[in-house]
Length: 260
Image (cartoon, rainbow, N blue to C red):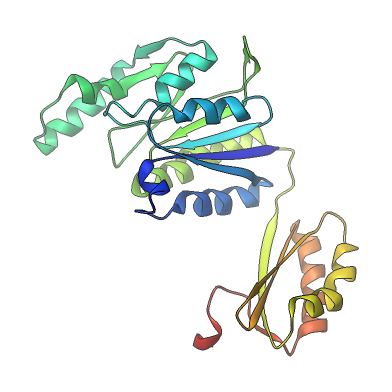
């Protein structure tokens, strides 16, 4: 299934914060047999509309991070509802949850904060244990623009997104992708060989394995060899790599050569 991640937030494009969402989501979905095929970062505000339109028909699953808060540039919810032809309606349970959470913190409730309880009709609410903006899941459906993808709208702060993803999104994804084969990933950090020599040593044998994806990345004095495959094929690939490059592999983790 074609997976697209759209990250909203001007702070990402200014370089003020690292985009850790892509790494986290990619790692979470790989065991489910899914891979991120495209990632887009857009500023806060209406730019999310164009990003959704560009991927609406080609993607099968879209994750959108950010733009669900109470400020005027948080309009992911509104634009998504508009594109799907869905009305926004207040969710009484969400209103109660937000009201109680603010009351216990001694924060004054405003209409702007309460707009986070507006939900597109038919959307499934994903609870947010660490913030006031809920996540939303909209299953694929027929719209005036054609069939829509599965849409997951997720909060921007990592401390809110990560537990929500693990507790609510992953179970939903398991139902969506139950016929997909799980994938596994392994990276080898190699020293003392150039990129082309590494490829010559293991490339032909690895690429002969069915469904395996292979990648190389040259660094200063090192080469990263990355392998993605279903678990049983990955074990066959591992045996090939270790047999051919045994003396040159210094790590299969993210540690640096200096730390080994």
